[in-house]
Length: 134
Image (cartoon, rainbow, N blue to C red; front, side, top):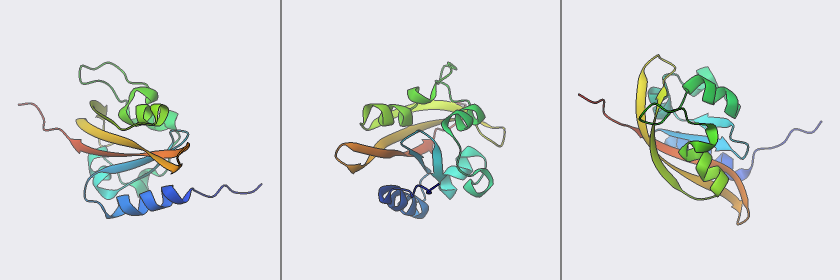
C-alpha cells in the first residue's frame, strides 16, 4: 500500500508554526490533530513529542472542549471544526482540560489551509490562554 504524502501546504504550515512563539496547532482535512508547537504544548499541558498526532475523536476526548459556560463542544463546533467545515476563518473562545490536569480557557483564531482554491487540506489554529478569573 502506498503511503500518502502530506500536502506541501501542511508541511509549510508546520514549519511556520514551529518558528512561532504563539501557541499554534494544525489539523488535517479529516480534523485529525497533526501538529502543535512548543508554545501550544505549554498551554495544552504536554509537548507534541509526548502526544503526537491524534485522530479527531481521540484529541477531543483527551481535552474535553466545552463552552465557557461548560456546555460540551463537538469537534465540528470548535473554531477549528467550523473553519474546516465552512471553509472560512473563525474566532471564538472555549474551555478545555489540559493534559496536566489544569482547566483552561482560550481564545482561538482558526483559518482553513487551501492547496488549491477548491481544496482545503487542513486548518491552522492560533490561540491565547485567557487570564484566570479572580
